[in-house]
Length: 455
Image 1 (cartoon, rainbow, N blue to C red):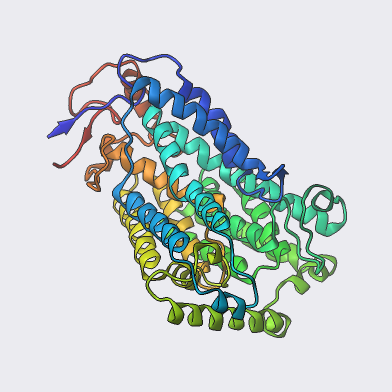
Image 2 (cartoon, rainbow, N blue to C red):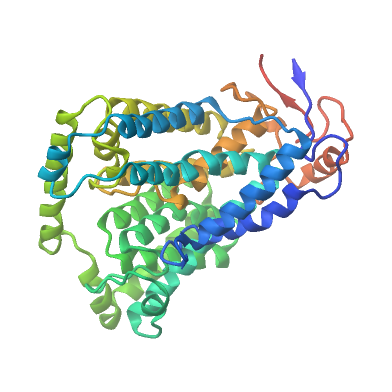
């Protein structure tokens, strides 16, 4: 069965509130890696996310647009809400919480922590899905803005490290006194992880623009080094190695990447530069103190799991261990663990099936999420907004590929769905223009016109 859908919406070829909501969503994507900048009690990116949510909410209610979210997003969301509600009604024994070294958290704190996570876990994919159903190319713009924001924060970190500026000191609430830089982020580890996750985007751009790709990749590398985050530094290297393997048949990209890496090695080996970055490579003895602390966190998380294995000790402890997997189980128990497994497993499954030469951006997003989930073995970044931008984009591409349905059926003919941004076939533009104008072209016509969805 063939289902034809119009990306711009039926009988609505002009601009709508959804199109204007793209502006605050772009601002959100750009600033999502700037967690150290706040507007009162909110992070700056949350202000833009709230504004976009209000605009898209008004548009959705006025046009009675149905809510379409993949099942894996729903399953994970239900698990988070269940875990949060359980601890409101059946809190953990206060004596155990005191034994951990802190007073019990109030129910309000439990709810606030859960809602803040759901803003990234559920609301962000939902909003991005609305934008993707409107115009698919919006998804590509969000990806570029997200990577650019990480690069800007990284460059600021590098400039502060050299002593050229003091932007981090002047504009960010937390400043690391150990020499590690956090740019515009709330912590050095957060900046490093954001740079590592954006590295596949830079490598993708390198195959299309030598200057822009090299600049973005170098900027992110500066951020990873300046952060002093070992997990991020490993993630950055892994992203490059994956790119080398994937680009083995693309001689132009491989040559550009090899030339850039040789240049980076030469520059980093210069004595003045080496004196700056060497103390930030905290492998071996330099990181022993941190390792001891991580082992203590691990042991505490295991004790938490043993104490309350079904629903954990409370969602407000979701970032209290230095491993996202231990954090899921210690704070939410088996309930949250299974829900997150369904959430991330469903996302990876969909991205794997959607990837292909007609959708190179899916491979980029998939690489970013794999790096996050890999680095998460030793890092605690789990609830931050910037982490879920690739997840939200994958969810949106799934809904576009399935014609807007909420099922997990993925289009088996990726060549018949328009890519929507850089890297796609220029010949699709005519078909996409007809699509936005409401013209239905016959099967076998220009790419991006029809979506074949197996029923």
